[in-house]
Every structure is written in C-alpha cells, then in structure tokens.
Image 1: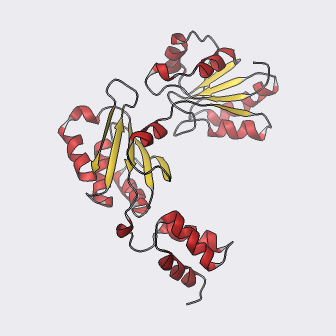
Image 2: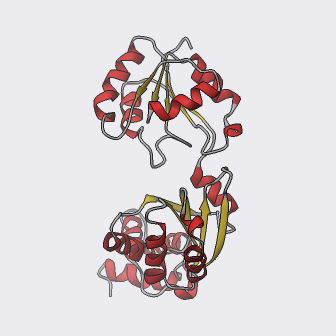
Image 3: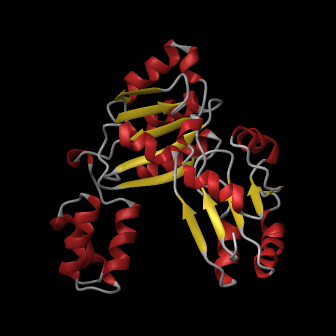
Length: 281
C-alpha cells in the first residue's frame, strides 16, 4: 500500500471460504493490522499466509491507541482494522478509531464481507424492507425487559445478538414481554458446522430451545417480527419521539403521514396525537 488509508476489513464469521480475495490482498499489503484479539486473529493470518504485523485494538484500549494509529497514518502507513469475526464496529470495537481517522482527514475504506446481522436477516423469513439492530441487550433480566418493552410496538423487524449464556433467559423475556405468539427466529452458529435457523412463535422457539441443550450453544442472531397492526395499541415512546421530531420541521398533516408510514400506526391516531402535542386540542 502506498497511501495512508484505514481499511475496515470484514473477516469470516465461521467458514474460512467466506474470506474474500480482496480482504486477503488488503491484509497482506497494509503496513499494520489492528486486531480485536491478536491471538485469535493469528490463526486466520496463518491460514492465508498473511505476515503483516498486528497490534491489539479492543474495547479497553481503543481510545488510547486511536491517536497513535492516526500518527502512523500521518507517517504514510496503511492500516487495516479487523475484529474477531465479521464486520468491525458491528457490536465490535472500531468506532473511536474510525471517528479519529476521519476527523484527522484520512480516508476510511470498507472491504466488505461477512456480517452475522445481515446473514441472519437474509435467511430469517421475516420482513427485510425495514429493520432495527440493537446489538446485545442488557445482561440483567430487568434491563432486558425494559428494553424489550420499548420495542414491543415497533412495526418492523428487530435484530439482536445474544450469547449462549443468556439465550434461554432472553427468549423467556421475549415471551414474557412481547407475548407467546410473537414470531421469533434464532439463527445459531451461522456458516459453521452446526448452523441452525429455527423460527416460529416465541413460545414454540422457547420450547425447542429448552428441549435440546445443544441448541443453546454458540453465538446467536435473534430476530423478532414487528408488531402486527392489530397489536398496535397506544402510540409508544419511539413513535411519539419520531412524531415530535417531525413536527419540529413539518406541518401536522405531513408529520403524521410520515410517522404513519414509518411506524405502521394509523395516520388518524398519529394526527390526533400531533394535535395534542401542538396544543391544538
């Protein structure tokens, strides 16, 4: 590499055949690789005969290391950023580095590839025209339930990541908060030997999970269907915040129409709420 660029490089989430030729070439030719865990990534480097020096960049040192890496770019080096698996920054480190590099005026170039979020969504059978990604929910049940309660009336697909240690408890909380009939899909160990994608009602998925301990192992993408129109009761906090933001820039009728299109709520209910928010009723 002859120019100072930060390459954000996606790596396999399981199957090494998903490593793109461009990713291999990039990692071979940069001056330095910033890896979430150098010991973990060493196996990938060995497999593809990549001998580029690596340094660790993780949640605990990223802010400290970012300015040092910006200086290396200033010195004319090309750097690649990788995570343990998949696309960096998607529930992985890299945000502070990318911000620092962009602020310093250096280009940031994506080298695209695997991402568990997109892989799970693509095979889930749930609506993909709109979706939200929330990463990992809080570790404690009380915090998880609070977050799920905020998502209960969202009308589009919601995607989460979950660990094997919490998957049973998280599914139980989904049943408790969103209801036993909410459609749910678990995508487990994507691209790996024991890849499994299982969907049904939240209660069905819970029963399947509890019936086979082996299905509780591995990394999970959790996909929750959006609320059906008949499930939408009072306007939720997310919809009200959306409506408030729209009202700051648009007439009431237009704001209500856009909010209805985005949220799935009826336009009339949002229009009436907009009138209330504007103090017109």
